[in-house]
Length: 231
Image (tube, rainbow, N blue to C red):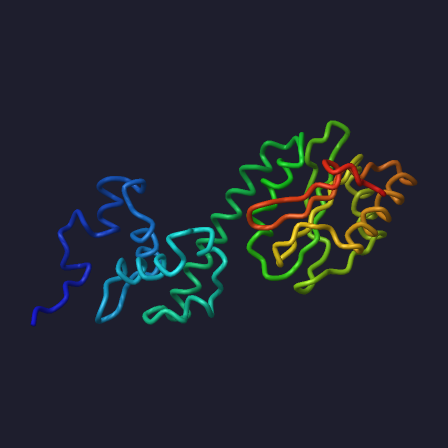
């Protein structure tokens, strides 16, 4: 019975690290990139084969890979805690890079701009987070900040805390954003109530609450687009 070849026994040009150096990172498949992260496979399969098996389980969808946590990854034979952490950390860096690139645009011109900022940050989460974007008079981003984190069905919002942050940052406008882990985009009564409370508080402070955007991993709902801000 022939012994299975390990990656180090492959032709030099087929090894992921050597292939990256010789041909550039664009030449590597998703499985080869993941193989570099995990470093090694097992006695029965190479790191590339193990990576292909992981990707096959999620239909080769990297967005779905980003939703897997450390425990999920450890369910694959050959993936221990250290390898799982490497994959999760790499996926998180990818999300943060995307967010940084979008934030550099600075100016918010539509609800889709808000979705682009938060889809990677919030779309994969199994619990709700509530964020605020602080804007100047030209709708350029001053800062974005997480206000609260909750459970699957909700999170607690402190209107006074949000207005305190807005005043400290000399913001002229706010955009609210939170996610619905259920995938249901329809705003709840509490979503509508908190939007009205913040809009009313903003009028007193002369700080405009311009929109409230609810995101999932692939879609969004905009209060402003639907004409229900502050209602």
